[in-house]
Image (cartoon, rainbow, N blue to C red; front, side):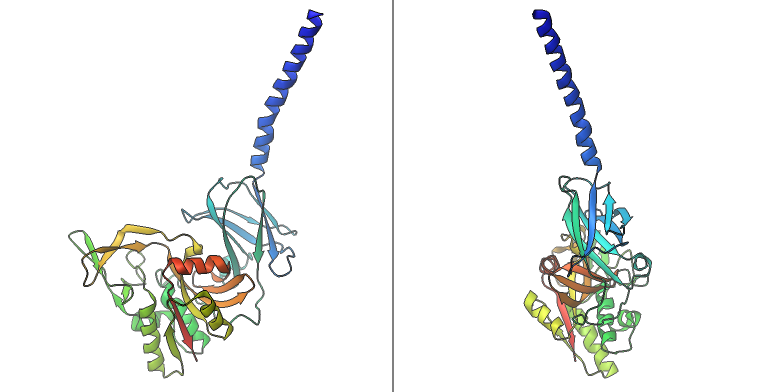
Length: 328
C-alpha cells in the first residue's frame, strides 16, 4: 500500500512541476504577442488597409517602431514597453514622404493586457473642412511653426506671401543674449525670442506678436482682412469660428503631449528680474475642421492631421489658451 501511495505521490509531484514549468512559457508567449493596431474609418468603422503606422515614445520623441497595415487594417507592434506613453500615427505610405495628406495621431499608454488598439482615421477631405493649404516650416524655419501657420491662413484667403517673407519682414523678433551665464530676452507675448531660422537658439512666440505680423502684412498688401487675438477663447467659441469658415492658429504641444519645461533654457524677460522657464515642446497649428469627436489641423511639421477633440483642447488649455483668427 505504501509503495502504491508513494508512486501516486510522485506522479502528482511530476504533474505539478510540469504545469508550473509550462506557465511561464505561456505568459512569455502572451507578452510576445505585442500590440495589434486596427486602423478604421472613424465614421463607418470600416477597416482602412495598408496604412503606414508609427509608434513614437512621447517622453523621448523618438519613433520606436513602425509597420504597414494589412488588407484587414491590422499592424503588429512588439517593441512597446508596458506603462509607457506613445503617440500612434497612421498615414499613407505616400504621405509619409511627401507630407501633403492626412495623418491621424492619438496618444495612449501601452497596457500589455490589452492586445488590440483601435485607431480611427480620416483621409478624405470633407465639405465641413476648410481648404487651408499645406505650408511646411522646415527646412528654413525649424522654430517657425507660429509664423508658418499664419502664412498658411493668409494663403487660404488668397494673400500672396511666403513664410520667409513673413518671418523676415513682419514677425516681431528680439535676440536672446547671455550675460554672466544668465539668458536675457523678450517676453514671447511681445516678440519672438531669437530667430525662427536659428535651430540652435531660436525659441518661440505667443499670440500677440503673430497678430501684429498679420496686421502689418494685411496693411502692406491692402488686403480686405482683419485679425483677432482669440487667446482665452473657449473650445466652443473656437469651433464655432471654424464652422463659420474661419481657420484658427492654435497653440498646442507637439503630438499633444504634456508640456515639457526646461529651466536651463529659460530666460529673464526684458524689464523683469526673475527668469521664466522655457517650453521645449510648444507648437502651433491651424485648426481647419471639426468632424464628430475629431478635429482636423494643418500642422506645419506633418501636413493634415486629425486629433481627438478633447485631447486637442486639453493641450490648448495647457499652453494658456493662445489662438489667432483671421477673418474676411
